[in-house]
Amino acid sequence: MPSLAQIEDESIVAGNRYIGKIPVRNLWLLILYASDLYRQLGHDKISVEDNPEQIADLVAEILCHQIERRLMRNLSFGYQNKVAVIGRVRGRIDALYTERHRLLDRGKVCCRFEELTVDTPRNRYVRSALETLAKLVQRKKLSHRCRSLSLSLDRLGVSQGKPHAYTASSERLGRNDAEDKKMIAAAELAFNLALPSEDKGDKHLAMPDKEIRWLRKLFEKGIAGFYSVALDSSDWTVSAGKWLRWQIDDQSAGIERILPSMQTDIILENPINSCRIVIDTKFNSVTTPGQYRKESLRSGYMYQIYAYLLSQEKLGDLLSKQSSGMLLHPSIDVELDEAVIIQGHEIRFCTVNLGDSAVRIRERLLRLIGVEYNNG
Image 1 (tube, rainbow, N blue to C red):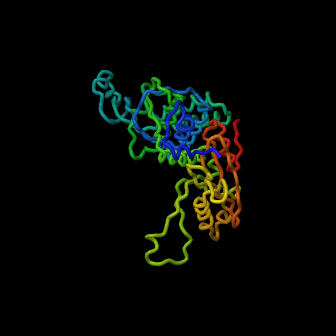
Image 2 (image 1 turned 45 degrees about the vertical axis):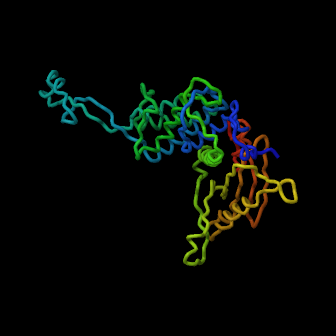
Image 3 (image 1 turned 180 degrees about the vertical axis):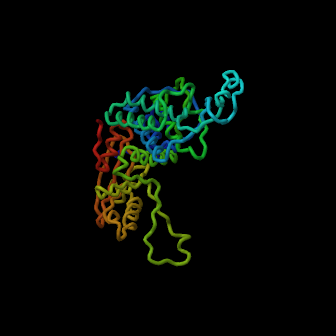
C-alpha cells in the first residue's frame, strides 16, 4: 500500500509546494497546531498562498484557545505612561503645568507616572485580532466565540483598536508572561492570513525543517495540538507526553536503574462518555512486509500499545479497564482503520492522509475518536 516509506528511506526533495509527497500547506497546518515546536532556521524570500482551506477558521480556533488559557490565569499586565492632575504626588511632578495653571492653590498637582494596567498594546492587539477574525470565519459558532472573548477582554479593561506601530516581533516577553507567545503569534497570523509555499517570492518568513527527525516530532506535536484546540475542553482532557508508571507489587534494589520507562504521545479522556484513548503517533508506514504474507502490522508497536493499556489497569479507575489504544500513522492517498479487541481493550491501527485537504484531515482526525465534524 502507498505510504510514507519513501520519505523515510530516501532524502527529502523539496519540490514545488511539496516536501516529499506532503503538501507544504499541510506541514504548515501542523506547525500552527504544534506552535511551540516552531524553530527559526533562517529566513528566505518566498511567496504565500492567501487564505487557503479555511485558514481563518484554523487561526481563530488557535487564538481563542490561547486567550481562554490566558484568561484562566489572568491577562498579563503592563505599565502605561499617564499624565493626570491629582490630589497627591505620584511619580514626577510636572512643575511647569502645575505652576501655569495654579494647581497648588486648589490643592492639586500635575504628575507624570506609570500605571499598572491590562490595557496594554499587546492585549489590544489580541482583541483587535479577535474582532478581525469574527468577520472572516465561516463557522457561526466560531464567530460568536471570537465576539464573546472580545467582550470578555472589554470587561477586563482592554480597549478597542489595533495599537499603532505595534509589531509582534518587537515584543520582549519575560518569564512571567511567556505564555503570551502563542497568543501573540496567532494574533499576528490573523492580520496576515497566509501560508508560505515553496515558491520564491517577496515575503521574508522562516522555512520548516526538512529533516525526518523533525518531521516525526512535528507530526506528534501537531496531532496533540490539534486535539487540544479542536475538542471541547469542558468534555475532553488532552494530555501530551505523559509518563506512565508500572503497577509494581515488589522490586529488587537496583531495578529502578534499568527498568524501561513508558511515555505516551497523547491521552484523550472524556469521563462523560467513559472514554480514554491512548494515541501513539508513528511517522512511517503502518504495515511492513511480513515473513509469510505481503503485509503485516509492526509487532513492536503492537506490543508497545498493549503494554500501555494493560499496565495501567487498577482498582478504582474504571476508565483504565476499558481504555482503548490507537497507533496513528501518516499516509499519502490512502486511509486505513482496522481494530482488534484484546483482553477487553480495543486497539486500532489508523492512518491520516497528509496529502488530503486541511478540512478532510480535520474531519478524519475527529472521526477517528468518534467526534462529529461540525462545520456550522
